[in-house]
Length: 176
Image (cartoon, rainbow, N blue to C red):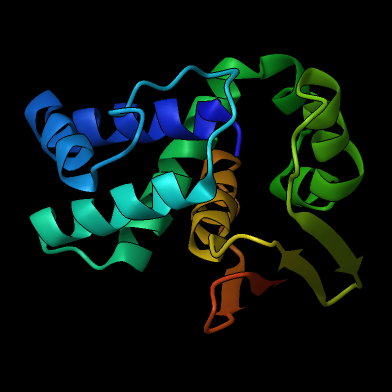
């Protein structure tokens, strides 16, 4: 998994709680690299899962909820880190329906060894359905990203979601 996910996870913990909390989570996660991440490095997704589990244990917040909150935070960071990509979309729907066909292609250009999740979209007059499929159990992060996107564009349509038990797939339905 790309290092930017890890560096932003640490930044998220520092911002939401404190630097001491982030340090305690990293220490408690017993990571082989002691939490030394670079944004361009590659790390096993298990490191992130260990950090989320430890953050959950230390904060008392469910791991899925932490991932959702992190996803919302991460969307905001993406607007800062990748403005050339994000600014090319005028609506939440236009961005969300092009994640798989455009944004993840850009990610793979920036990071040739990236393995982003598969995102597909189906649009009709009544609703938009976004499907998420990954080999990693991180669909709750995707949920937060979708919510963050809709908030960013002040899109107040209804959003419903279902996430698989293993956290590797999800369906997001936007209506209204």
